[in-house]
Length: 148
Image (cartoon, rainbow, N blue to C red; front, side, top):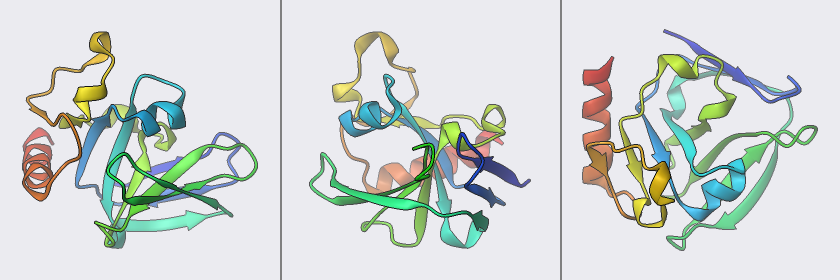
């Protein structure tokens, strides 16, 4: 199934034909980025991005892990579209709120639960108090396949 999305003003549009997993992130950066209690991350292999139209700008910051994160956003309306981390150069992470069909995706886990607002935890079986490792990512991929 293909998934499409856009920024708030429609200047940036994208399509992906599949995703690896969806997770809720409770880190401080996601709280700031979304203006909410957590962010929804849709992790996608680069090869599964079938379309990206429109100009984006990039904001680079250091994550809580100390690693660099490059956020791509619409320069007109400010909507975050996606981001990338050097630890996963073959993947992009799309902002869940930018995906049109987000209700068709299921959150497989949550991370940075150690900084989560206590009354906003989702209660996922798969959770990490901090940054995910490769074992956690593999478990998210396996669970996502089961959820579909």
